Image (cartoon, rainbow over all chains, first blue to last red):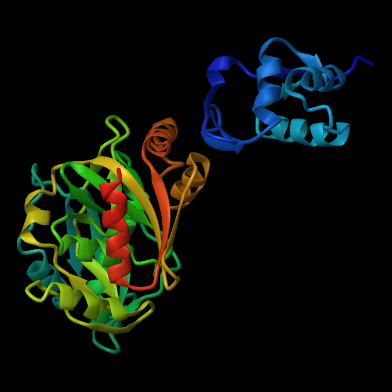
Length: 91
Length: 275
């Protein structure tokens, strides 16, 4: 079975506004606003460049954002939240 | 913003006519919202008369008020129409005062002192824009005034009467769900200039009953607090998001604790002069 891929939603579905330690995201399809913090904006930024598996995503996050201590479970939880809110698509 | 108010009783309408005597009619003659004060059962017009709130928008489980508090019922019903029905502006449950074209917005939980501070600043040369709702125009970012009767509660009633001995007040409404309430009629300037918007320049989160203190708030904390203080943020969709993000990114915000009104006024003036 192929490993699950995570991908960004179409760019025009989101309005992303960095504020401070938090980033505001308006999700146009639902009309809901989300206030997120690391690593969620970083995950969205990486997925904008193309779909990734969980393992690849974790590796890229570690390289780019010094999130090396992020555990697989924590990343899973954040990814799950992003998928549940419609900010990331899982295929 | 115009209201049409219907009532099963004459008294609340007479109070409204007296207290809003100096207010203009809606420009096009068409009210924006309708409010009805009615007896839930016919005999309750006379027997222990109880006022139920009705209108374009209603809360199904709002408890009726005794007729003696009919004015409060009318004010609550009008606020409810704004809270649930307003679509043009982003509505913030906040008081607002203006000086030199710039506005200070004050918001907080009930009892934080937003009405009292707005009334007291109004007594010191600021223009009262409103004590209940600040209306933010998503297109311009400007704050529009909504200078309704200022609802003063408990100890604040005497504090404001002392500061504004010449002002007009409504009747004392004793024993309401929020304690004693007395309404202050906004002064002539507040009414005459109600159509003039202002640039938001300072957002304050006052808290009464603590030693004087203040701290700055970051945009994300202000966003959370202001969305909680808005009754129509979600309903406005992306326009609400735009108005709110602009506000929290561009306007400085402070939380201020204060032990008494004089202390709060001094804090506001100091923060204002440092802008």
